[in-house]
Image 1 (cartoon, rainbow, N blue to C red):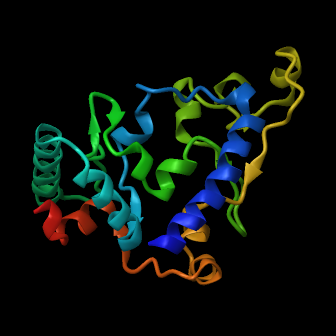
Image 2: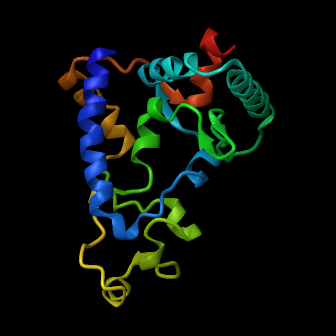
Length: 199
């Protein structure tokens, strides 16, 4: 855990800098929880260990709400049929606020920025299509960020993609460099369902 926390400290130094660089396009604020309301949230066992530390510090009422959310999500997943992936609200989201914010996972820390992935074109966060991050320079019909819109708004810094894709950040290459092991990876709800803390 000690080495993972060192990695998070290093990562957040960069993430905070990236959000500051892209501030003309960023609309993230407390209470905006679209990114936490409908997803499958890739996580690792190491990230769940950190969540458990945050969970242990909560009051009993909040813990009970989270445990109820987890049970209901597990039940909903069991009933899910069809070819579409199962998505859900994060069980730690209460009244549109993360109850374990300081202990959140990698995907939670990086969402909202444009990211790049080797061999693929840059990915714009889905919230751009809902009037949030980067929406001020997005042309939905062309599915492109438009330089003309940037100039019209007098924004000098260009939208930029960063190498912050979850697959890269949670890779063995990264964990070895910092001296820790992520352990098993999977959707958050699956990892919670197999952890006795939450069951």
